Length: 255
Ligand code: XBP
Image (cartoon, rainbow, N blue to C red; front, side):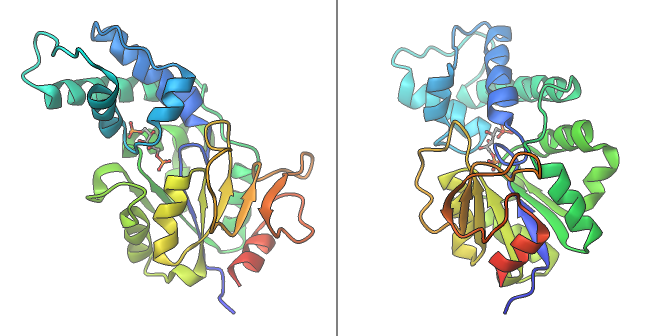
C-alpha cells in the first residue's frame, strides 16, 4: 500500500481552460501586433497543440503550415521572430489572467484547499512559462497561493518538454518523493505520456481540445474534478462511489 503524499498538477487545460481562454487569443494578438496575417482558429490551434511549448508551437507552424514564409523586416532570423512573438504573447496572457478572463476549472480550488488542510503536498509540472503560472495562480487564488506548491516546475526549467518525462522527474526530485506516493493530474495525451514513465499514476480531466485523445494507461479519466453540486462523469477507470474528486479518492487511487 502506497501512502499518498503529494498531488502534482499540470496547468494548461487542467487547472484552467487556459488554451481556450488565454493562450490562443494571446498568440493571435501578438501576431496582429507584429504585423503578421496569421490567425490560429480553434480548429487549427487544436492541431498545433500537439506540439508542447509556445515557442516550439510557433516554429512548428512556420515549418509545417506556412508554404511561403518570408521573415518580416526587422528580425535577424526565425529565432528572433519567435522570441519576440512569444514575449509579446506572454504579456497578453498575463493581461487576460489579471482581467479575470481565465477562471479555474470546476473543483480545482476545492481540491487544492482540501489537500492543504489534510497535509497532502502540492506541486506543479507544466510546459508553460513560469510567468504564466504565476499570473494564473495570483489572479485566481491570490498571491499567497504560489507558496502552496512545494515546487512549480515549468517551461524551460528542463531540456525536453512534454511528452518527455523531464518536467515530472524534476518535480519528484525537488520534492524528494517517490512516484508511488504521488498522483498526477493532466488533460492531454502528451501529459499522460510525460507522467507515466516516471511511475506516476495519472488522473485525466478532459476538455474540448483533448476529449478525443488516447488516455490508455491513465488511472482515471474524468469530465472534470466535479463539485458536490455538479458531479463529474467517469469516462474510464474506477472512481468507486465518488461524485467529485476528493483526497479520499486520491488516496484510493494511489494505494
Ligand atoms: C501546455 C503547453 C504550453 C502552453 C503555452 O502546457 O504546451 O506550451 O500551450 O504556454 P501544460 P507557453 O499542459 O504542460 O501546462 O507559450 O508559455 O509555452
